[in-house]
Image (cartoon, rainbow, N blue to C red; front, side, top):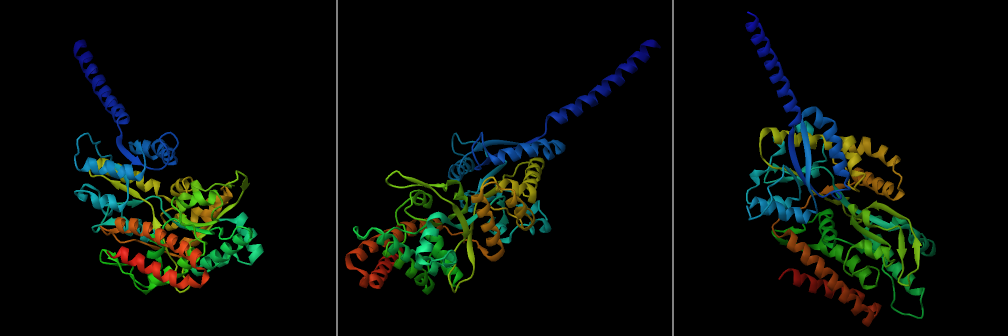
Length: 454
């Protein structure tokens, strides 16, 4: 009898221990999802910090562990994703989540390997996002790229030098709100700087530099009510000419910086003082100008919304990648979506974007959380940027570029040839004098158009 009782007791203990063991095992083996992203370095990344925060809170509660396996740049991730999707020898296995632009999805051999977020987000949840951001992530009628941080084009101004120019000439900051006003100001700036060295003719300085002429013409034409594209080529309608003329006349007179490289470089050396560039480039705008004679000057950089044409709509480019989720198991897909929903909650999203120079992706983040975050920013430069974001979101429509196979090649070709033709026109103008301005502008436009239409 004693043996039976002992045996029964032993079975009960074993059963209880088995139950305990199962509980411990479950706690030790959460659903792990892997991530490739571009936000910071492996050891110093705002997104990594937020992932740690998620893992220690919601992740811990729901048995989800987000693991970053690569922090790189979008071009490298594009190549790695395509290599993996095409099964190239030595390619890494695709992660559960990776950062992507539409071009990466369009280049996949089969985009059905990606989750359609409409299977995991209700219409009410998706309506919280800015519509243009969701639209850009939709490829082949499937929402495969979820926006988590976006950028746009912003006007950056060296206020220190601009204030001197303004005081001397009467040109105001508000004159830069339109493209026509900005380019007139650039012509005045060229004359003003040239006059400061009367013994050196033709040494005008450029006021303005644009990082993306393709966007200037594209947004310009569309804002003026005209299609920029005709099929897989450029339309070259009347609005293109409207955008060309003020740019060309300012460039020919020396008011526009036409050399290569990014706008941050010419502002850093004082070769220009106003730029339009990706808002994310705020990271690279210096608070010091170093001149060719090695003297330097502390400056203040401020941000304003992108200029618009006087007769055009307030339209602006929206830029930035988003996250794709790779199809796997229901548990891993759900875990990835749980993390993305957490990251795009207004409070978390604003914490993320204000540390990386990007825009949040939902209306609530813009309207409720971002103003509070601006008040707490220590950097005046960043506070100015985020105020420009608020003004842009309130007053502008975000433009979504079409998904064309020729988009990248057209962009590259236009960027190269616009700069080249305007630089040639600048030399023609120096040789011919002011009387040749309109004729040189027209000739260079004709040459540019012929090159693009070949």
